[in-house]
Length: 165
Image 1 (cartoon, rainbow, N blue to C red):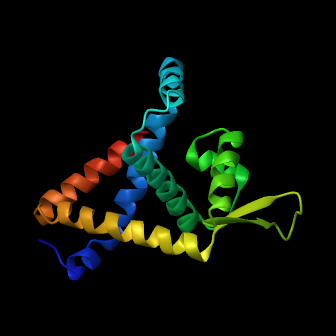
Image 2 (cartoon, rainbow, N blue to C red):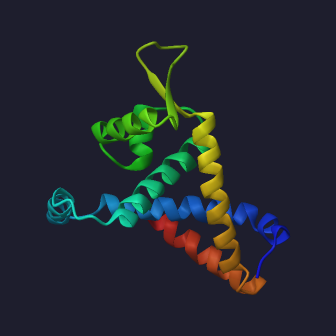
């Protein structure tokens, strides 16, 4: 199937592929028509008990935030809002939940006390690394089914598509 050596070989490719995938997904999410957002809100309000879906959505959101924070460092709330492609108020609500669960913390900016920076806690970093390892292993498995030439072609085309967003 795949081994740690393959995962290490593909490490940089996997990291870029994941970041590009997140960019594409965020762009697609941000371009959802208003009518679909209202429909989604109505369905969410119905409190349909589909716990695995909700759990997956929360894990996906945490993974997106973890990827952003682990690669870009301590961001301001505004920077995080832009990186997530969500309104500032939405980013604040998301961060409130993550702070409450101990995965991120707010820090004062040493240069400007009005600015709040967001960073992963040790617990958040461990959780992010566990999810990232899981994702990397699965992407490694997928990439290992391709020849080196196919993988290079796929990654080149994928990056072109991601850049077009």
